[in-house]
Length: 566
Image (tube, rainbow, N blue to C red; front, side, top):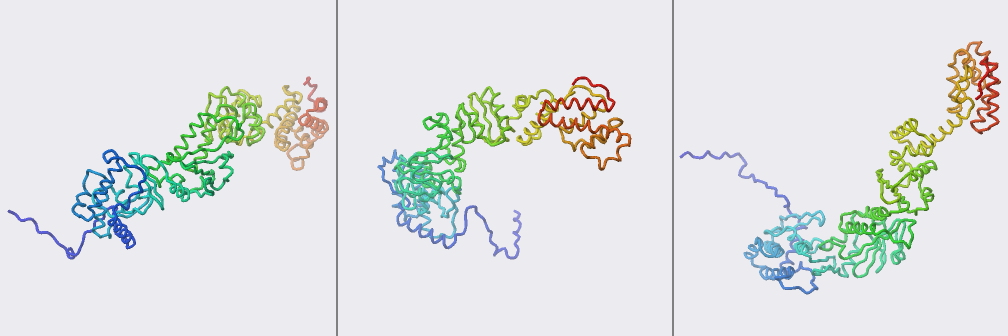
């Protein structure tokens, strides 16, 4: 039979040790070893040291889970010096899980070697070192061996808590209250004292931002506040500002000292708020109050952050109102549309545009803060914003053409062009409406000039063009146009520059004949421009007659011939 190949060895192999890294295991510091040693010695001395105070009557072990556990814990306690028995019990799959973890912890106490420890790491209850022995749950062993940790020690009873048993733990006390969540007096005091929010007062307590009178008399504030009432009658008021500034959530800071962590079973929570303007003698909508209860329950279940609570509570009420006008935290009745528009921040033009939209609605409307718009069956206007510009940005797509038609009498291609341009660039609506209003106003005034729809002969048509451009865009915009005239239009351009004293650097652009003719036309053209300004700025009927006279005189001296009636 062939021999197996000889094992190959290298120098130093005899002294080389394999290092195996086990997850969750570490070398304990002297401080941890000393603490664990002291706690395990105390546990060995009194294996019931980790138990809570039990001030309720227990049932029979066969029917009462806690009674059954205490019976087995008593049996394990009597066997605490029997290594073989403890070694068998700590791996036994049947029986009380707490007793299994206790047996492993007692054996660890007997072993006396605390240099290597396991690490229990929980995102809620933190990190703790313990000595792992047997098949008991790590959480149970860590809780038993760290029985002085007033939060962690409750994890021994996690399975009991799932079955409806209640435990309350604080630095100076630890109680089991059976299947009824009856919070001890001492626990309530400690919970409020060491919560993430600091309170003032005794039976009535209040956070920063509130006072005793507000909490005692249930006075509503503009931003709202939270009222919580404990089973023993202790009341605490939490302002919105105090909730928004907590690094640790208020509910976790209290709920993690009870098991199960359901503070909704031991406190009543109320949001003390109504919309600004809501009548004191009018009840809030039932639908909103039901939604409010759901939000408070979510907060007490640690599913909603403190900083979001106030906003969500107000929103639940505001979004249930089915009449009037809502903006931000304010409500206005159906007869207070003007007050509602006055409350919005923006220019008068912007408010007029929003008013135009509201007048055209056949249903209610809800404009959310994120810009989404919804039609509502109820005749209510809900604006989560109170600034006109973002509101009009949201409304423009569906109601822009209505605004152009009702405010500016714009329809057809002209309206479509302006609508699409604003839809794409979203110019500030204050400036957009103001410019549009000014431009249309000027256009309407220019339409009042005589011969508006009549083709004038040259060079009168050029004079009319210069006057209209000056009225629309200013005299400066006409200089370039005046330079480009040809023939008689060149003479009229020179006359225009003379009237406006703009000839200093432009004489070389005009031939002598154009300058001579144009100079003869200056008095009539000056009279024409003067009367045009009065028509545009003052809407003067007398100026209209002067304009006609001046144009007819200009036609005579320029050789344009007799004009038709304007």
